[in-house]
Image 1 (cartoon, one colour):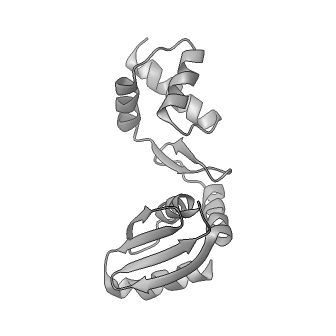
Image 2 (tube, rainbow, N blue to C red):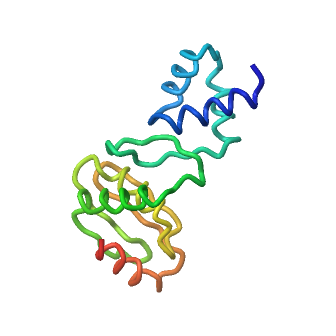
Length: 148
């Protein structure tokens, strides 16, 4: 099978069902008769620009980079509403406390909401650190986060 055919099938698969891991994707591809190594699959994912985002179940799933719909934006807000306990400033960071196990979903939601001034997030089990571009953008980010 040609590389482009395999990559097109990968896109079809991730758009049809939530795929959380490379192993899961490899297994689904095998079900279609497409054998691939983990290294090849990893390269395909990178070349296709796939990324992970929170799915409806709170787990992660692969999506195409441009595939952030209105429905996803609404979902991200719901993730934050249901999982975030507090949002506080800490020097040049914002610290988000979540219910246990919800930090990764909250971080993915924050990253995907493209809030002005947010550079990125690091998540643990119940804590998210939000890196901000400029310290003076923190009040606006806090206001937006607390508004959710």
